[in-house]
Length: 423
Image (cartoon, rainbow, N blue to C red):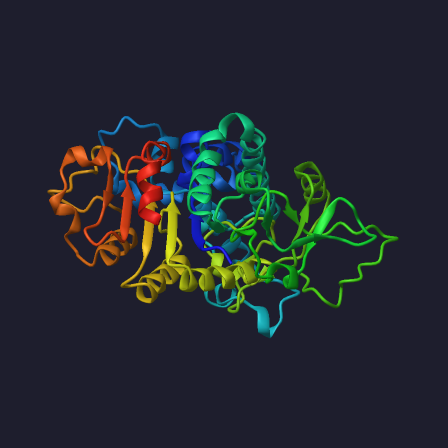
């Protein structure tokens, strides 16, 4: 069996090539949701009111002299995930006549909505949430189609590394695109054709996914644009109805078929252990991600991620912002397991203003700073570097940590050094 490298892809892996960022998606979401008014008497949308609430809380942290527009102020403090999270919480404040003891949120019992939300149009809440999902899927699909034009450097990075050491990748993608599938070709994601069945979608087979061979593996921890619930026709028999849970995602062979079914179908909601509302979607967003990892196959993907971190000593992190606590906890376990023998490559971006290593830690948030400290076995590893070192890759004295702080494209300039480091 060939040696394997664990790869974790975050949103930062795609920004330089595509121009799509959390900020740009948030701006689009706010604009698209303006048509869903908070109630019939108001001109404001549900999302606008949510944003106003965040602004009122964080306004003290924004300079009064700031000339930034309102939308710039909003996107500086929240993202579409924060907005989606609030939309998921709002139904918990309304009494549901279908609720029963095991699935009543504590919000319903102990809380009341404030004045702005008192006459809340719940239909606008659901439509706003669906709009967010549609916007994100469409925006990702738009750049996904341009892989041959924009993804050449992305593909070259993985081609170079896999060919040098004849490695195979265990890829865990937090993004919703298919650039890794278009890059690697020969991979196992657990999806197989349905025998003598619906030809436009594939189902997840756990036995296929758990096969140990020399294929790459690709696991979308937070879903993918071609994932969706199955579209079995009235005259078709779902022969897997007793084998799969009701929240099992299928993979469609093309995005338009997945989108078509998403737009013409309706799904019953899901809930957390404590009864909070969850919207069932093809992608995981919002701030209750760990509850959504119970959906199939995301639960199995998560299990493989943990096992890969513990088994493979080589790890590549690209553009991961350390905002998912469950992932951070697993990365800490990677550190413990491979404390004396690891090869960790971290490709990130630190602005010139933030790269002041002789003064302060270059990484934020704190979990990212903590992880780099653990990797270097020092809280002050950065103090010996100068401003000019930002343009280079940084390799630790024990040759176990390699960090690039100038983005993914810059890392390609040092691909030979990265390949030698991974040996």
